[in-house]
Image (tube, rainbow, N blue to C red; front, side, top):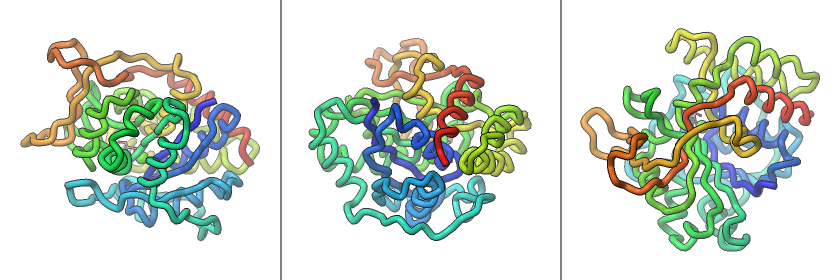
Length: 312
Ligand code: BDR
Ligand code: CA
């Protein structure tokens, strides 16, 4: 069983990832959800995380609010993609479940220090502000992290915020730099993978056709995501980003990639926030990440539908 801290900025695809995670509770133990400013501000991502937990009947999940801005850069959201609420196109309510008093960064540090070394997986699917702040405040945790399995970056596919940079890395590049240099084992699910995991009508139908509440909700979230991306990319469905992290935990054999060196551009004229991936080993820098580049997308959606079928 994986033991996971899920760090997130819901966000439409974040919300689908949370449902996927909760549906996979036989294989994944969720130690806590930590929220960060990203797609929308942290007040809203914290609210949305709780709304999604309540959709799944999981008001017991501990939710911790985290960083309200990137380490250095000014905060900039993605309301143009996810809507003003962060969960546009879904039935929202005021969540009844509490936000824990502890700050997300403290929760991450305390959990890693308390649990056996190597036993906790961090899954960040937003800007890496919380993880970087935790590493800066408590450098000893780097050696205690089992793995960091993150959604972020892009190389072959380019960027989605600028021609060179992906949103999560671009939003807080300094945080990404700290994480990539931390020495913790890292698995990256970049745009190269998520642009293969497209929400084609047949795949979304798998979710909409489930005879529960959460399947159709996940379909609604993905359909809402398409408003923006399908138009922009002109293809049969939008890229589905954050759920890829959960799929990788459950079935790594659905993915392919390489152990490579990855650094973040912090001072480019046109490329700030780009992930520079040494795919051909040209830099002489040691590998610091397993960089995934291919996925069996039909297998991924089937896995997700199976997990979601366990929810109310
Ligand atoms: C990432 O950016 C966010 O908008 C999505 O939730 C995802 O985590 C994709 O670039
Ligand atoms: Ca996200």
